Length: 393
Ligand code: FAD
Image 1 (cartoon, protein in one colour):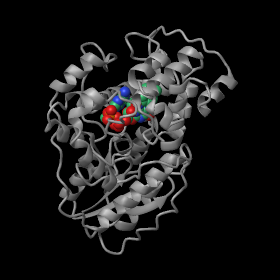
Image 2: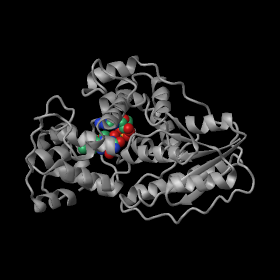
Image 3: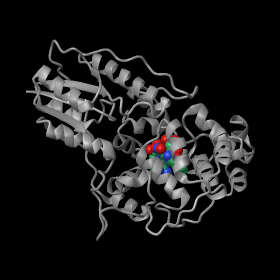
Image 4: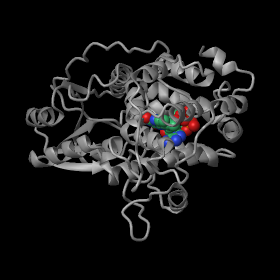
């Protein structure tokens, strides 16, 4: 038996259920990544990060006497064509929540291949936890309680062998695209594991330090989680082996929370989530332009927006303040801020970006929708000596 493993955004060998299952069940395994032109061009930063992650995955597979087949085109057509070439009947894929990914899964199923879907995108699968009488949790705290109490799957080990059949045309990697931000972290599982190792020694300081803007004491693992260079379950397990890890692991729960919201409410990036949310926004292109370019004159807002452009990443506290300023002070529609973040963020994804924007704008899951972050008070509290503001001036 020959099986294809279609990698999408699970670009890793460790704790990869789709890969492990294929290696356990088939005599020959063909790892495949398809660059899909329909998904390219939304963010040059992410396009570059993706390319680096795929190159790293290929390197890791080659070091294990295997390889990564690389194609460009429609992932379904490319998979079907490769299956014909190598005589594969089955394809293993990590299940995903987006509209696009779910359609891809259905199209693969309709192609006649034996499609197997595997968990791994989140710690607890979207849809697995349901409150009485509902299809998903709308409020974080009860979700968090049931998430903690849930039985998590066991992480899977590294496959012993990934036995690629001989004679497969592996294909060349396309040229690496340029990203717009100069100071981004490099993509790939190798860089991700190095960062995780470094971070684990600091988990203990997370509770006290995670809001310290200049101290930069959060994990910065988000881009790696976004592309599955790390398994969120493995990150949680590794952290829980350390003292005082709960506040950090709770943040991983926020990620799962928004995935289960997006799974139940796929319009999350375009429509107000909260029933009865009133929306009236001001169309002020000049104010929006000042916000994007970091020239509002409000130091903490401008610093956050500069960090975003420079690093393709922004500290969570600054995300809250800049998003609140755009929606609550300038009155600009959250969808515009969402689109701007989506263009730059290495970790930009539909569930977390939309869920958090809606939370701040008061159209989402926040139980206090009229909350506003006062930028000056936020700076006094979280950047008292203005180091962050100066660093990103
Ligand atoms: P840490 O503090 O180290 O947390 C560890 C992990 O937990 C993160 O890597 C992330 O996967 C998860 N996490 C932490 N906070 C949140 C949160 N509020 N919601 C969901 N998951 C969380 N996060 C994204 O991954 N992608 C986005 O597109 C995104 N857009 C955002 C937009 C706005 C307006 C706001 C306010 C927040 C957004 N976040 C987004 C959430 C959060 O800011 C980032 O996940 C976090 O800053 C990443 O840095 P870190 O890895 O150092 O986080």
